[in-house]
Every structure is written in structure tokens, then in C-alpha cells.
Image (cartoon, rainbow, N blue to C red):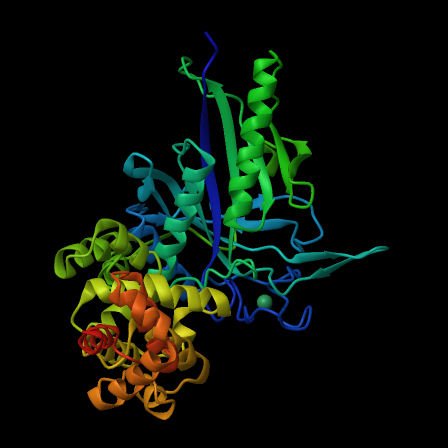
Length: 475
Ligand SMILES: [Zn+2]
């Protein structure tokens, strides 16, 4: 019998917290500024400077940890992680090691077998490094990012496929967006992720040797890198080769991972307590204040959409996966009372318009009241569903209210019997063959004639009414 293998994955996410200033100094954290324009003696690590903890970053870290169901440690301790690299002017990073801010939480994710709780080992605060820019003949360094507050969120190795890892990241990003603790902008590096993966025989109780993966710039990149690595390790195991613990880089152009270095152990970093920041107790009131500030979270909102609006689990899950989309839905419901119709329009026509334009729903030209009025026009038979789709596109393009577009372009359905009868007479006189076909029993001929009337009216005639009038005429 062929050996069956199991995959085990753990993820380490780095989230840039949405603060105006850096973690230990007053420099701005704004992205895209001139290189080395947001630096000072503290974040450049000049001798004699002292770090001071940014209270806002501390609060946001606690808030996130609470939303991840973590325990908050009573004592806060920072440590120096020493390594020598040009993007790190102090030659150490202020991080947390022996006593992280928080630990033992979980995040719920969707899997093939329903919702699973994935353990969160720890979430701790640390400062970001600068950025190296490699040119053909030299390397440049920009320290603007150095000292930006990061929350490192480490999962337990409880994910069992690249797709589950992807789902975990989507759930984490959604949670962070609900909390408004980070802009989660992946292009700007506000949310980054490293992964570790091991493959072992499914009958073995022990995990396989762990391989670390870095350099993935998107969630899809994480999934692709893990799939590649899952295949590479499994092949080696099948050939009876030993797996070595190492760090590999994802190369998106070559669609494969490449060896970066043999694994560094944590003792290589010579962690020791940061002498410039003495350990301090976390005030209970602060934790309570952060707990009270937690908004409704995605899982709760999903349940509420199901109970309050009777939406399906699938619809509720899709809609809450994007906070702004769920906000839009609930805003629309103030003006239009059919949740299922709204959900279909938002997930269908509106989402495809957003994709076409590559914009977010918050940038949509059509406000909730406008969508509501469009849907009411369909319900009242003023426009057809097909025309409503065109009106939607025009409303988004121009920002004009749908009623105005319908009126100014004369798109309202023709329900006036006199006007329709006139057109029907004309169509009948021009299509004698179809008329005689119909009379000799070919019912298809009637459909052709209705089609001609619709064509004449540019789709604005009410098809049911045309059908009725036409049959009366032909009889
Ligand atoms: Zn600074």
C-alpha cells in the first residue's frame, strides 16, 4: 500500500499597526516618503538615545490580542534580538521573547470540514527594520520603515493544507480590518507572512522536519509557495531522502522555492532583556478599556446576518468577509427591505462592477439609497432587470442617481397600451409570413413577433404586456 503523508503548517504574520508615529520615537510612519526623511537619533540607534514606548501601539496590540482570544500577560518585557544586517542600524531589534504580550488564543477559519479553531501561540510587539533597495551595482538603505510598530502573530502548527493557510490569512485580515488596527495594505507591506511547513507519514505521531518559507508578497503567493514545498518535501520522502531544516525563499518568477540559508536557532540571536525599557505591569483598566472598545467581530456579524435577515450561511460568510461590504448591505437595508435581493445584487452585479473598475465598495459612486431606489424601480415594474443592470453601470460611472438616468435617457418601461398597439400593428404589417405561420399553429412565430416589438422599443416594452396585446391582435 502506498504511504500516505500529512502536511502541517504554521504561519507567522507581521502586522503594521496603524499609528501616526513609530514604536519608540516620534518619527512619522507614513508610507512612500523620500528615503531617510522620517528618521531621528532614536530610530537610527545613535549612542545615548533612549526608546519610549508608543502608548497607541501598545493599545492596538492589546486590542488585537483580545480579539484573537489571547491571554494578556500581566508584565510587559522587551528584549533585544541581535543580528547584524544593514537594514538594522542598532544591530539589534527591540522585540519580545521570553514574556510576550499575549499568548494562547485562537482564530476561527473556514475549512472543507466546517469552521475550525486554529491556535494562536503568541502575539507580541516589535519594531520593524529598514528597507534595502538593491541596484545593479550597489545596495541602498532607507530607514523610514525602521522602528515602525509591528504585531507578530504566530499560529500553532494546526493548518493542514496550503488552502487552509490561505483561509487563515483571509480570516486574519478580515479580523484586522474590523478592528481597524492596521490598513492591511499588502503592496505597502503592512501585512506580511512567513510560513513553516513539514510533511510526515500520516501514521507517524512525530512532525516532520520543518522548512521555513519567506518572501511571499501575497496570500496567493503563500499558498503557491506552500503547495510547491509540500510537493518537493513529499518527493524527497518518497525517495527515502532526509529533509534538512532550512529557510527557503519563494521566487515568484520561477514559481519555486530556493534555498536561502540553513536554519538559525533562537540562541543565534542572543536575546537578552532590553536594559533601556524596564519591565512594567499592564494596568487592568487598560485591558478593560480595550475589551470594551472591541467592535462586533466577523464571526458574530455572520451569525447576526443569518438570524436577523435570514440570509444563508454562504451569503452571510461572503458578505462579512469584507467589512465595508457588510456595512454597505446594512446601510441599504435602511431604504430597501428585501435582504436576499440586496445580497444577490451586492455579491453579483455590484461586485462585478467593482472588479471591472478595480475599486473598493467604499469608493463606489452609487450610494446605498441609490441602489435601493434602483431596486424599487424594478419591483414597481418601471424598468426591467436587464435595463437596471445598464443603469447600475451608468450610475457607478457618472455618480448620477438611478432615477435621473432612467428619466433623462427615457429608459422607463413602456406600459402605455396605445403606444404599444401602434408598434404591434407596424410589426404585424411588416411580418406577414410570421403572422400566417402563427395562424397555422407555429407558436414560435409569436415569440419572434414579440422579439421584434422589443427590438423596436429598445428593450423598454413590458414583455408580458406585449405578449397579451399581440395575441389579442392575432386572434
Ligand atoms: Zn525616529
